[in-house]
Image 1 (tube, rainbow over the protein chains, first blue to last red):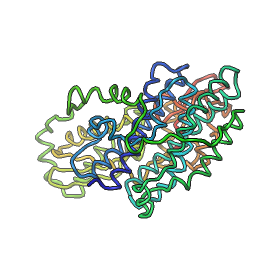
Image 2: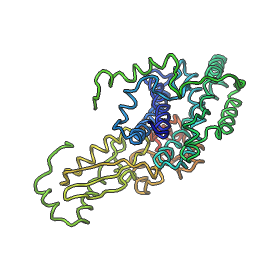
Image 3: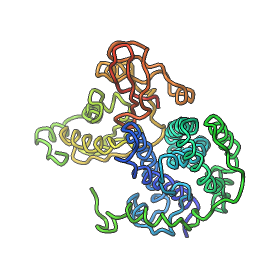
Length: 250
Length: 179
């Protein structure tokens, strides 16, 4: 039987790894050199978080799986990341909106997780909180610049916000795994972050002269392994090396 | 280089030392390992080196903590620490990564900050409080000392640095971010 802590830690690791992989796709393709470096830096932060979380998950599981095995040798349906992080880059506006929605959630999330009774999760959170602060500032500044920019940039930024909005509901989902860990003082109750998330997103969209989408139907499924079509393609690329040369190490 | 066999004299020499002296030998060897990205700073200057314990006649255990979780220099640190300790006569080197307490730029000594500035990197301004993480820092140009500077990019040549420019002397420079 897999423990709740293993499942929970693995989901956090998957969120970080998949978003890191998506951001890495920009390397060499961003609109300016500074942004190329910037997006790669943000991606690197997420991959660093993923490595620490996978290593912890492997230790919790106690079956001898390391970070590489957990990240590169699990199948699509075994990944528990939210759907938001796997959404394709599409254009720069979609990349920024995805980051904004995610980082606005993760900043208060990590802050609260520093109080977790699981010492390793608390320690990872203490580092990740600072990184999330940079990510939110970076994506927030771009949201304002693009929203309050040209007709073209505003149209694209609004389209990105509207398209990705339906993937934000999943951030606040709590199944029985999360609920049991919240009761144990290990996990963060995501519902407790809704007010802060909503306020920071609303303030940024207001300043960017963008429309906040109305509350509506929300996508779901990522936490239980039901992913979007593009996810399999992402895994094909991300897992290529370990699938082709199983067990290889640098 | 990492697997180099230690010179014979050093190994035997090590065995003649008492515990405190062996621990000092180990600490001094590890402490001198430079940051591959910022070679004027050592891992001791950075606060990355947390503890060194001698666990046997020629066995040593080292605790290091990452600066940024994704810092690629950590892998290089690990190789370099092992090589330095083997050269100091230790045959078994174990390196642990500890996450708590989380590293902060507040651990940089005044001496380390001055080394950074002399090297052309503006040291972190102030304390890594939540306000410092969100507000814009006042950063002095490491070349001419002017505060008439501007941020070019939040992200610089490494995860720990941002790209800035001095309006007074027109010099672009790296800024070691508060973290």
